[in-house]
Length: 157
Length: 157
Length: 157
Picture (cartoon, rainbow over the protein chains, first blue to last red):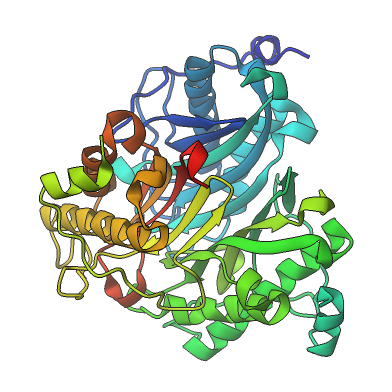
């Protein structure tokens, strides 16, 4: 199965890959390891999904924001790697939800990101280790931020 | 020293290893590296320790919750690895405390997790690098969540 | 370029390397990988920069606190490694700002840490992957906490 073909087949629209909003790089590669910087939910028109869940954003909207974070991260990986088929698997995810103190469904929100990864990379390679938690505040008031570690295929470093 | 024997000797009771509460896997192994998903405090009867420190949970209760997180993570590792003796050492811990903004003793709370790791794996191998911080909200209102990286023994991959 | 010489040339004053405030070690080395524990902003006199941005600390003060975190981490790395020239590059940063819910400039604050890393290790090796987010509470009310992953030079393990 070809990852790029699957993305087309699924009808996924990747937003423009964002430039770093600070003194960092989007991805660091060391050997087969890819460390991906925290990504927010960029929409196809380049705008961001903002809001705090439990205040001015509901769980379904936050789920979709988390899915947008996944699409944004794929756009970054495509730009950095050239070909998403170089990726072996998702290893680890830290999912951070812009959350009121009484909102408690962070895993359900971050599933928006994780389900997309499973759609694209498959059940075995698209599921990583994960934490999903509630943050007091996120940059520019984005609804969700996710950082991740991926692994490249052995012949693809 | 045998890790499984030491757990018996210490009289530690591991709770039932929890199933993932979302689209992720409990542990990802790549080479000798083990990435362990965020774990909450599961009690032997399968229930969770919930509450926010500084609001409806005190520091001592939170310390014990962090210890329960450690026991829960050991239960997961035992299920995934078969034998805890395959583990070489704890490498890295992110300890997240469900915390009111004015609670400031996160390291003292996460010591509940860390002391357990030292009891089980010893001083040299049970102490990892660590951050211990206060989160605005955690899933299901659990008191403490910890994610970790472990390393397997060289011959044990 | 010699890293230690550059630190002198830049006139940087490293604070005393702090001892762990809990059951953990400052740095874990595995192969070429260095996992560095969460560090706070220690001043040359050993005191900590405390406060919450948006409440009793402004963005500029928080930026300088983040820079102090960088100096503190360099002090720890110097003590642990002997020679900072053993470091190849910064791989990954998690920057945590002690933040009111309505403060949204976490990347600008963590740039205080990141700009220092670029000054010391250069543009190519001093920029890592990064997340910069707002935490509800940090230990001892420190203004900023940063944890990081560095990579050692190949011949230097």
